[in-house]
Image (tube, rainbow, N blue to C red; front, side, top):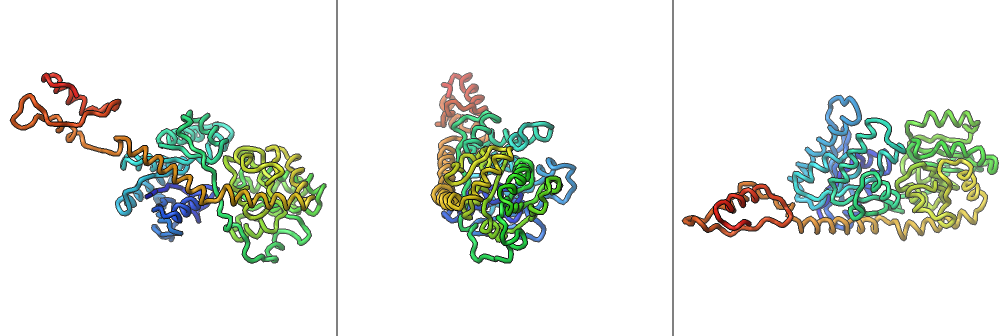
Length: 448
């Protein structure tokens, strides 16, 4: 199939998990011999068009004009996406599916859908109401309305978990048969360590210290603040524990300040941004990986920790609760509560047997259920289903009003007869055909 993906994030531009999801999905589709094009944001100096791992990646820069706010910038970016899409359509089309990822590409996705009469599929990775646990200002309400509009315009909506299905249904009142659950996937080989670098560990922890590893954005919904509050209890039970926090975000200064207030700053290392190689090394050195999210639509980080062979502790919320079976392939703790989070971490730090069981079962779960080849084929099945439905509708046909009126013209030399014409499709209102039918009826002809 010819597939056009729209995403405002794509490596190396990566803010959250969306970029990684789209990259892995596109690569898996291309590996399965589909023709895949991605339109995404670019930076100065990057090639505007490049084939990466079998995927045609088209990068555009936002207009070089001042944007008074984020919403205006998003609208300008969508215009640039649409400009690029026109060129891509002319050069590589026709496409069979347009797949938009999240609300930031909703305007471009909708415009392409109607301009080219193509079925639009939307993946909702998270919602504004979910991220903020409600809608409290005009910007949040605006984003929520765009999310609703995108799901309304989409032929099918994909979500990554049962939790997200319930959230999207509740927020946007979508019919159940319009939503499909397809979980995120993981390429296990991306998290394997080729050569262990023992000197790297020294930058983050002493040789005797047990590393507790967190990686992600430093925002309130990721729950790093809860992990900090759990550290005094963890250190009381395991004094050699050391927390390594990798990632950046608006809460970084606040978290560092709180670590000082708790008197644990010497036991917390804020590593900032780390590359994939360093991340994999830290997973290898870590005794446990912790993801204490307050809101998590899916929780791909848990799969990444499992793929790396690190025992994981997660919050019992959202998609994380659907991935991890407590005591089997990971541990689950009540969200937002430091005491049970600390107790679950200590259970792993105190038991090598439990840690090894979680490690092996986690790796098996990723390989058997969340492999990207399997996930990509499920996605293609949805593409094919939608495309087959689309082909059975009259929507792809785009005849002009003049050609429709011409069908009602009497044959040459006849006054009462008319040329053979296709009747209007039942249940579909066609203004040109109905008006012509009324004229024919007034002349004594049978209504079509």
